[in-house]
Image (cartoon, rainbow, N blue to C red; front, side, top):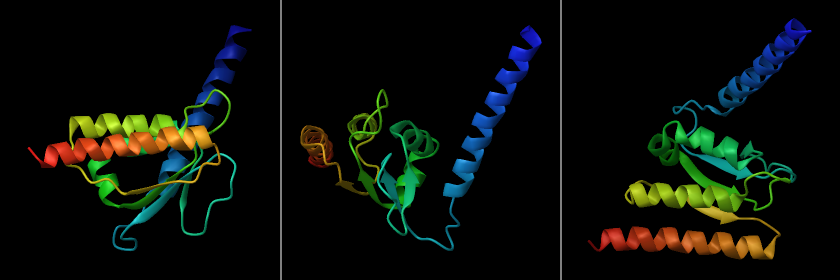
Length: 143
């Protein structure tokens, strides 16, 4: 019985890591072919033409955190939904992560960020984090 469970666990891990590899490979771009990309964070809506889709905040953070400055230099726009599924981090959580990164280094480039959420409370909270990020950057530029 233990060997069956072990095989199942390895199979699931192989699927998960295979998906991550496929997912990241799909999102990598040839810099010679594409100058800037657009990122769309949403778990339900259709992906607009020409945008790269992320379903969870965790996926987007994982992608960006690999080489944050390089990735942000190559992103034109990030469009965010707030609600990304029950028990999942939200677009708001993504912005809190980004705000933390700005605290660490207020000089790195931030692409245009658009909030497309239909959740009015979530939208307002996300807008406040964007304002906070801008205040951090302005305070740094005045130093």
